[in-house]
Length: 195
Image (tube, rainbow, N blue to C red; front, side):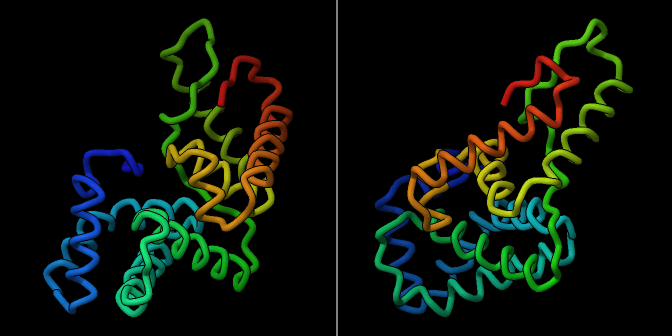
């Protein structure tokens, strides 16, 4: 999974600024390079949020269409990744609202530390835990799910999450705390779960 600090991103901020300037001048090769660098993270976030691969693909395409149309107005006050996450998040929330869906997620459980059990190779227990966690996350309110997804599954900081969701850091911290509290309560039979 790519996160803002991963090797898959543009080498440094100067490279990012250069590619943005080239895109603003109409350089389609630069735009295609930016899409190539970010398409996986955009798609995976959309998939986690809408739980539908075709809708996630459609949303991903809409993200890059919006970027293409709006790039001339991009002032660089945030990183390109943050801007992409924000557009992606807004499109996913719009989709979820329009479909009245309250679920996100099939997600990679490897980012969550599973509880210690006597037989760690017991796939039945692992499957049971994963099912329980998915059900618990599914019950969270949409914005708490988003905070949990950005923080725990995308590996973003709370500050980055606040910037993407355009909310105060304190609000994001409270949402994250509430999401974790609710998940721990829902998963109380799994005593050693850590987020």
